[in-house]
Amino acid sequence: MEKKIIELISQSLRILNEEWQNPKLENVDGKTRIYGAEGSIDSLGLVMLIADLEDRLVAEYGKEIVLADEKAMSQKNSPFRTVESLGSYIAQLIGEEARIV
Amino acid sequence: MSEVTVITGTRKGIGRDLSDYYLMKGHIVIGCSRGSASLEHERYGHYELDVAEEKSVIHMIRDVKKKHGRIDNLLNNAGIASMNHILATPFKTVHSIFGTNFFGVFLFVREAAKAMMTQRYGRIVNFATVASPLRLEGEALYSASKAAVVNFTEIAARELARFGITVNAVGPTPVLTDLIRNVPKDKLDALLERQAIRRFGETRDISHVIDFFIDKKSDFITGQVVYLGGVHY
Image (tube, rainbow over all chains, first blue to last red; front, side):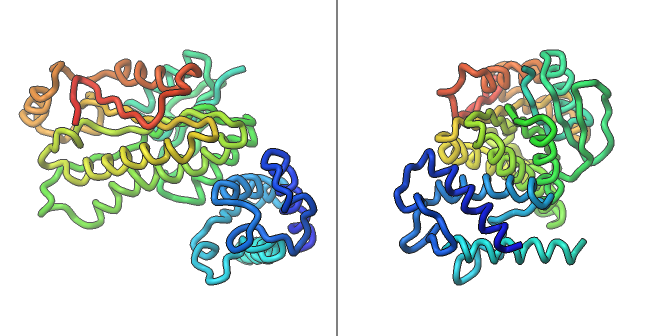
């Protein structure tokens, strides 16, 4: 599942980058840095990524997940650091939701 | 194509009147309230929820987007009032007032703005009150919650401007609805005395301001609060 999520994040970044035209996002992979130190996007980009990804997660998994939740914002190591870290975080959120259901 | 307009607190009062009005204007109206719908119309959809309940708001807005493909307008009408001296106000009441009047506004703005952002267009209208600029005694918590809405509106307008979303607020005078049914007549008369135009407001006064804010031509109007009846800070 994590691999699929990473692909969703990559797709999202590629599509958003059609507007941003950021060279750092021309070849997105798991190691691509998203936000924070040496990140590829600013806070505005992060907002757009969050909105776009939440939509994709509903379409793909039918899960109404809030990416900017307390947990994400309070973690010492932000899940938005890299594509991989965000992928793990989302997989964890989906897993938690599945357990609750 | 019909505009898709989300209105909170549509079961009664101003929210119900605004639903009828925008249905009459050809909009698809999506409403919500704690109780079931009080109107039936082929272009009306209703969600039973508490506006301060995060999961329910997220579900509603995503469902609206899925069903209708877009959200053009959000009218954050849902509100509760509680007239009381601060020394006699239970803390629970404060939570309840801020829950509906402010947290609800935040949740709807956040979720609707995500939908509006992708379409690069949106009109959000929040509800303030003349009780804030008039510093009405007995309305401290209600006024404070609405003052928070005003400041939130002004900053949201800045944060969302780049996405083609405008955020404004209308500040009604008292309108004869359930919201003020427990306010004594002498208090209401004293309040009217402080307005430049001394009469109760009507839904048409409010919808007139909303029409201006949500007009497609109002794309240079944002972060504004229009108080009715000639009240101002």
